[in-house]
Image (cartoon, rainbow over all chains, first blue to last red; front, side, top):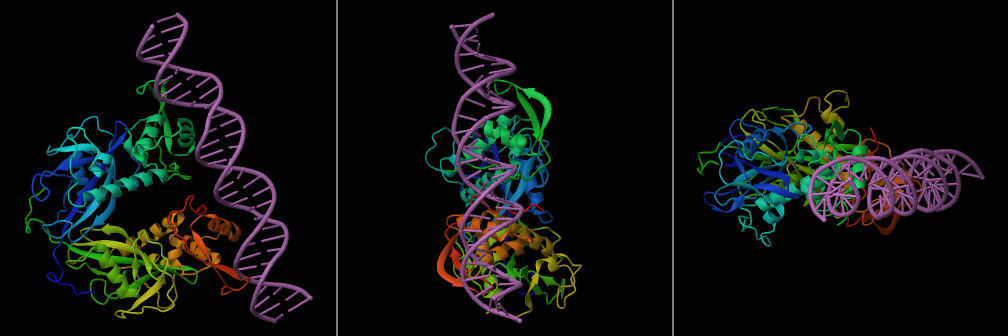
Length: 253
Length: 253
DNA sequence: GATCATAGTCGTCTTCCTGACGATAAACAT
DNA sequence: ATGTTTATCGTCAGGAAGACGACTATGATC
């Protein structure tokens, strides 16, 4: 272990990058911003920024999240009961070549948020937008106007893929899928979250039996809603349970 | 996003710290080193060191692992078939106060290794040693000579606890427990790994049925051994499967 | 107003997995 | 020979999940 000497270690920049996921129109979407300067000028990237001198990593991620979305963050252990988003550390990316300007180590964070009725309440309104993760990850095969036409900047495609995979696996064994839902939601809305994140179709009857039979997962509020059409559905809030045992099972292939 | 300017971002040091776990004498043990200089001089800590200017984070972790143990590392997706250890990124710790000297962001990695017949083959033979994680995490209640008598330096107790928890949960749904075993091992040896890591007692018959019935988990080598006493047991190697589905179930409480 | 489409909710049945535990097998120790 | 230890096979009951039938309560359409 080298002795302590401020000039003995190489200079690193430390940033946080955010994978902010939501479910919009039955598709898993991520927040992307358009870069205004080189490198990768004009390309889409994940939101992020430098960690400040006296700022914890989680605080930096929460600050960036507020700046980009107006959402305030939960810590990972707290159930997403109010309007805030779930925020957790994802992984750290430090390839020496990942930023052509200098050595940048980025601590990526994963945020899960409900689809915001009011978009980007605060912050500098630069060109941030939601895009389906399919479009962001497959630079081919998306023809809709305004969609990103090139791969994400830096190694952000890898970061996004890791974040999506984390979300996909974490909703299996935790109640985290409720972070994608508004404070009150129906079983069907929760099921559509699972279907969008996993990209599968689930049996409504078995899903209903499973989530209502798992203690602490859902708490009925007493109200009902018919916003999805059809027969009115019970409204629920997220219960106190964070770990689901036994877990939700993701269908094969 | 601030413009690029080398003087515009605060100086960070970036290190890697290692949680190296093994199973020795039916106990989960971690590698600890004794600090030779302040701060925390004389206290035990996790092995680690600075990331070099042109070194990837995983490469830095692998280098530290070789220096401390002589083990070479696998990437996370490769099954631990030869003598190398499993190595994966754990989490990043960047509290501004975590190192009193300066701002240090540490990317912790988790390594799982078989109990080494030959200890610390290479590297600087400073005072590195295995200690049961119970002793390292509970600064009270361990009276054996040579055991650490004070909490780990810095935030290393938190890092170690996170690493242990990662290992405990990951052997549930992956074949990672084989990383604690030598290249050839018996079902009973694998069971004792689970028992040591989880701190539980498992039914040998149900365990045997489970692991031999999971396709791709274990591959019989044809040999047998009697090194555990009793009836000779079949020898196995780790199979190609990395994810166990359905997972091993950790007994309640 | 009757009918239809849509979505939600309750049950049933079969299959698979697990935990509990009896029984047998093959080595070594005395 | 007998006991001890560890390994391995088998049986049985209970729980969870997939497949799917049936019924309910809305709004939309004719």
